[in-house]
Image 1 (cartoon, rainbow, N blue to C red):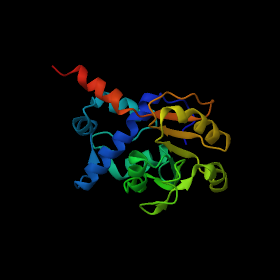
Image 2 (image 1 turned 180 degrees about the horizontal axis):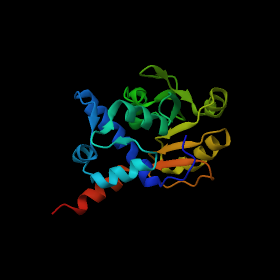
Image 3 (image 1 turned 90 degrees about the vertical axis):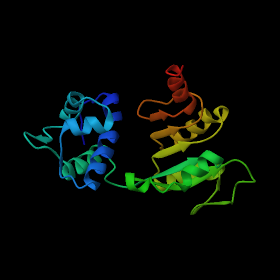
Image 4 (image 1 turned 60 degrees about the horizontal axis):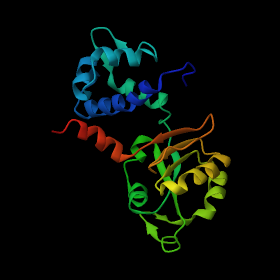
Length: 206
């Protein structure tokens, strides 16, 4: 694994490159140039070359990037060459949809459990999972060495749930709650708020 510091914005583009390489492989390509990647992603070829150069000499002069190798390399860099068990907190519409989503496994992730506080939801089946009582959450995380949690709960509940999760070993959090959460050093968090992205889009509307 890479030990030098890589800017977070570059790490954020790596999954896009991985997805583009997978698409090109499915289309029958063995090699791809930075220009071809750029055309797929709307990113300059120079930026792609600069980003990937942080991880060594990955391309071949005159041929570009060997797609099979780059897929393997990017999965290794992103730690998605293994399957990570994760939990979902919140069994509402969003949490239920995430628990049912089958595309996670192809990208290295598996929803192992879903939790909720609502007695009406606890015990119900969602996909292959049974909704568990949130009071079981900490024990489940500790016993199963879970490191990733996805929050799909109201904003007012998010901070104390995250505090509990961090205490039992969660080190990566995907937060759909519409609030920015404080986490200690060593705990990575990504915030997803669709309204923020809509506001970005609305700027360009007339």
